[in-house]
Amino acid sequence: MNEMIEEFIADGRDRMDKAVATCQHEFNTVRTGRASTALLDRITVDYYGTRTPLKQLANISTPEARLLVVTPYDKSAMKEIEHAILESELGLNPNNDGNVIRLAIPELTEERRRELVKVVKGLAENARVAVRNVRRHVLQDIKDLQKGGEISEDELHWAEDEMQKVTDAHTEKVDEMLKHKEEEILEV
Image (cartoon, rainbow, N blue to C red; front, side, top):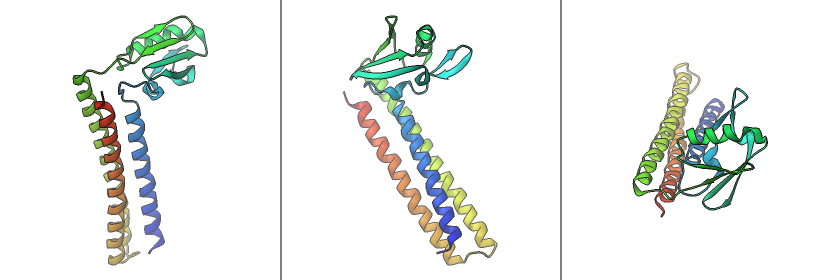
């Protein structure tokens, strides 16, 4: 087929891959009752007047299934790190012993599990919308080629079919990730 069409489809595939990867990253930041260093990815700390990601200020580890340990590189930042964790919407209570901050991950209530499933479904829908938007933009670019006489009607139809296959594959990936995340959240 036409080389320009192939480039548009490859570009669309790359952008859809990024949308799926972003969705996976967002899923990782949703608390499931298990300790994961990704839970703290969105936390920023006011460090000497600058908003700095927590993972740049401390080593974060999971020594047990329900425990996160935050070891600051600079002990003078303990209070700011503790404050940032308290202000986050994670609902975690930091335990500071002067050297490390321990975060016990509490069991999730049934109600909180249902809320988290809704949040995850919203994240998945955002990813599906992003994938469909990529499809729409790529198809518009290909239709512009056809209007300009650079490709034939048959090539346009082939490209539309090919883009739909790519879109369906990426939507299925999002649905599969959603299914696994829901199971993980609802697992008691």
